[in-house]
Length: 375
Image (cartoon, rainbow, N blue to C red; front, side, top):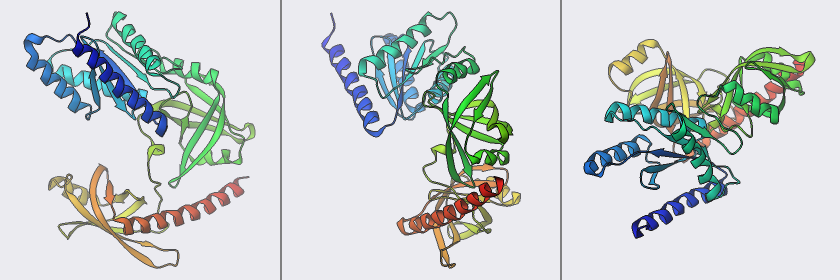
């Protein structure tokens, strides 16, 4: 007989999952749900407590629920299916390293806007049961439309999707400006995709080395290498298709490249640390190009985790210069380039926003001219 504790836990879990469903529908976002098995030995309750604390922390405090005696659910908010699989692979590895145990059965599915509580949990159970029945330890995962089993070849999955629904959206960045357009899959074979593009923008692809593909039935963005452009046949040929966890399309703010070099200074405790040139600017980040010696100085003095101030001047529409200063922190360092997160106040943010809009307009005029000359 079901205990009062189990009954309450069932309703509690359902309430939490239904709240996630309602939120996702209202805000048109998505989430992944994971089910995994672990036989709890209450004789060693503290081991289990430590394991759960570890899992919860590793997952960045996403929701973790008990469902049934030895099965657990994780709700990964705003995480797509391919990213969710990577998160679980990493978690699996870290548990093995730290606790010398294995989580053997894992099923993952992605919430679909048409899902009810029952349809979502039924689909999750399907993948979890497949994982349990599998002779080898595998993560089974998929969406409402397609199964992405770990053993399946990526090209098999893509061909089954692209055969059914041939329309995709292509996304590119022109000096930081997002450009998108519809294209049709003319052929997909052996990992090579031929896309039909009917707009004059096909000439644009002769200047690019890769593009991003978005498909309604594929939860992740796909990055692809452009290997051939045939304007006469309106075809772009792509290879090396790969699912991305994140792409430039996920950026919340548009980055633009300055027309003329803009110098910037990074200050620590109001004392100048390094100078550099801005490669790109957005409301939330800048990319700074500096000398290799300056990179070595930051790393040698162990300053990567510190908070800085950044100062630079941006032109206005009337040709004046506006001084921008903001709190800054280093996001990443690649060769002689530093990606810096900035936290401008409301006034500074509005000035950057005006500059980004001004550069966008200039770049759009430039792009129209480019396309006109290409025709």
